[in-house]
Image (cartoon, rainbow, N blue to C red; front, side):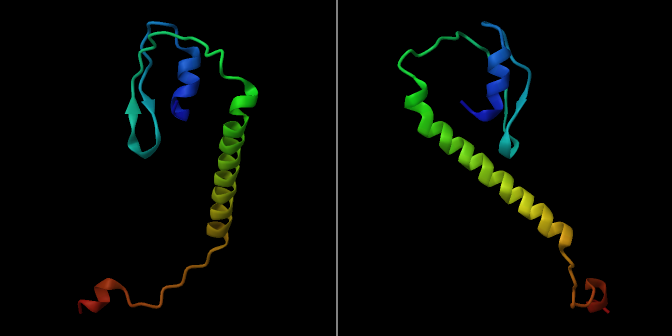
Amino acid sequence: MPESWQDVVTDLPKGKLSGVIRGPNNLFWIIKLIDKRENPSITFESIKPSILEVLKSAKIEALREQADRELRAEANIVSTEAPLNAAAE
């Protein structure tokens, strides 16, 4: 299930429509929950590797975003080219 849907589906009553859900890359959804059921074959141990991978990916992304913010905050951009309108003269 897409991450954008998780909170919505958890709180959505059976048979009801969600509001507009915004996702990454300008994707939007409206969901109608038909039914909820648990899969008894899914145990914590069976999905633990997937959970760890999701957590690892989220941590990497957070660290990447933090590094990007820090680099941008410390950046000093210097342009050595003449302004575009000066080239037309």
